[in-house]
Image 1 (cartoon, rainbow, N blue to C red):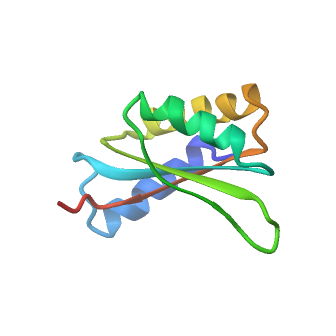
Image 2: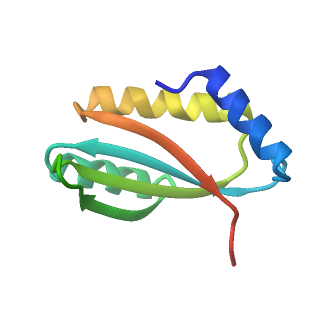
Length: 109
């Protein structure tokens, strides 16, 4: 589970590397499960909330299915912590094996 301290460290590293944390960035979010159907259901639900489905694929050798979503948005440590908590709860509620965290990249137009 990603802690608030983990996010504080992430934000410090990003700022030190020259990232402007006061702008929108492309935040990616990842879920994994043994079958594809529950991930497809979550993907449809989150698309209605403005998330873009990047991919659902199967990894090897564990044969788990991965859902990758993305949303362009600005986050603070607190707002990103809240988002992660919401996604952990969503995975638990839907009996998804795991919300596997997030990544971030600059926005390219």
